[in-house]
Image 1: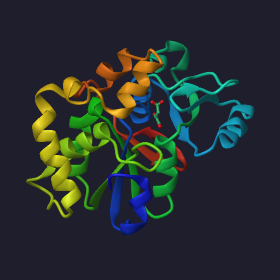
Image 2 (image 1 turned 180 degrees about the horizontal axis):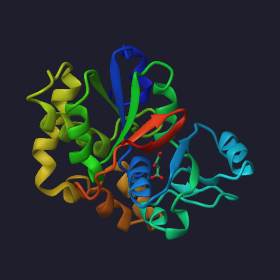
Image 3 (image 1 turned 90 degrees about the vertical axis):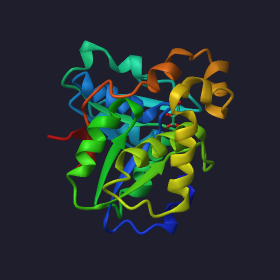
Length: 230
Ligand code: MLT
């Protein structure tokens, strides 16, 4: 599913939904859990995030790629490499990533979080599951984007022997990934969110988030919070 605005076309009753927001929400989630954050509660709105902050959560809020005033954490994976966050409960809202999780939550069998950073671990986990898999690309405000589609393609490429690739959108993503996989960084140059992040001076998150298999955590949603799968 190349954008959450098309999610209503999919039946999720037998599906694990893998949410991907490579720049940068799901890369942050994977990094944060890998660095020892206990849980990350994704919420759709800034207001919900504030409620959790008032209850003692460390709160991360991003809109339009910038930190929302009054919250502790921004949306850079590097902000989650902080030993003060070890064991912490984090609440998070982002423009597209946490919204996608909120949209999938009512009907998915399970929700997992994917990024290039945990691609191999996620692939192994999905191989051991009995369900269909739907990759939900968070995109940007209803539009598909290049980096999330590339990730969907990478996952399709890795799982093609175990799963039937059911939709043309999967084949599109896979073929795109085949074209770009040898140099993802130059392949995404000039894409909309790369340009947006560059305008804001956020360069290093781009290359960081395109690294493959840095971490072996697979975030899964349990009781409303993302935790590392056992
Ligand atoms: C989002 O959820 O839309 C993103 O993670 C935006 C960002 O780069 O901060």
